[in-house]
Image (tube, rainbow over all chains, first blue to last red; front, side):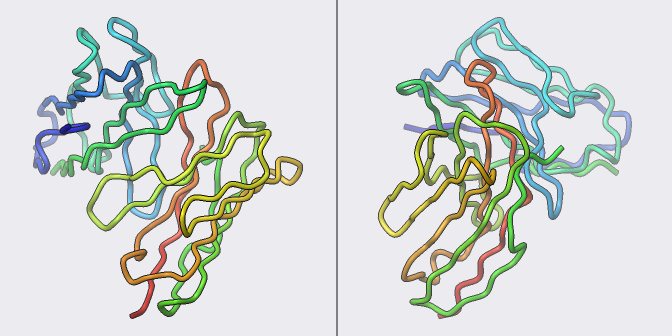
Length: 114
Length: 112
């Protein structure tokens, strides 16, 4: 099992450029989410999805779009990159077991916006 | 906003010693989870404790939860150099939404 796969692992963007961070999971998890992690801080939720065709905003959604056309994929789009979006981005998925759930995380995408 | 706050922010111990990390949170929760993050890697789920549970064990890990004080602790017994990592608590307040809110983490350094 590959688990949660994120690509690319590293990316440098210029201010104003757009790009898509890819996330794929092969565990048939219905729930997927995107977090960003900044130095010395925990993870902050950007967007999440409880199933194909359903997405919702998290704590810090501005400047990001998501879609969930399949159970496996949950891409994160940066519309017009800004230096404030320099961060490490993590995708995570989960499935409910007995009403409770733990997350499986990808290895992250380190993004620098210059 | 940070729901969970870990204490201490950093901890350095010798191999074989026990490590205790604390987490406080602000609102009622459904469950609380602990994760480990090795440098430059993703987070790994360690243990989940439900709001109606007071203590849970998994190998060398012991987690307690006190909902009256809105706090949790993670104890790692007989620590090893390989335990060096950052540890995060995360709270779940709504099983329907299933979003976790993470604290800022405790950096644990285990000296060989």
